[in-house]
Length: 251
Image 1 (cartoon, one colour):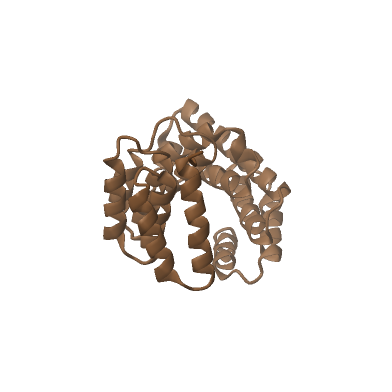
Image 2: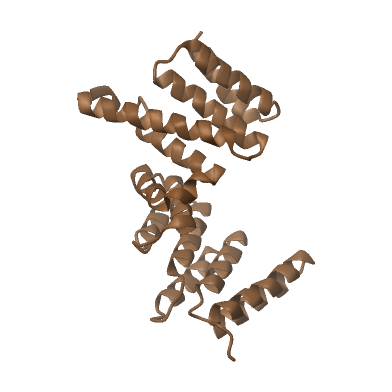
């Protein structure tokens, strides 16, 4: 019986992984190119080839793969390819192009695909769209520490005191901001309880300290959160710098 096209693609990707594992990057690229020519409608292969070109800094080649894939009427897993191309643009600091690519994301994404799209929207600076996509991911977010943390950070960004509506908004807008912050707090507390590395937990504690401050909670709440973040990641210079700024701003 003939194999399903995506099974053929997955088999090819195993070969690519083996070639990369032994350091044959050129051989891996050649195998990907051959598979893409043989399976031009495979989103699995097209996405991997775009990612490979992106790692090599060849955005032009990634664009060629992407545009070729879009021309295929029988293309499979288009959301995966869109995410790969958007990420390639972001890595190349082509944010306007990344936004244009993300605008073509299929509307019916859900689960892990929605999470990946949401994270890319955050990196492109579009928090509103990221929030909507995280909501589409539903329960998949709750078991993923990274996704849940990024969702909480999205809510924090949307409710940040520096945003115009936070300073000039009416009572309803201020209430909506506090609701976002309370939701972010709940999510961060869940991240801390999930199985994740100390680095993830440290940053979650840092964000929790900021949320406690924005909610006007007793100073001891944020201080304890910041102290815990420092204890969990004593070698993280970026985090330590941010913690110092928080401390200096509230002396």
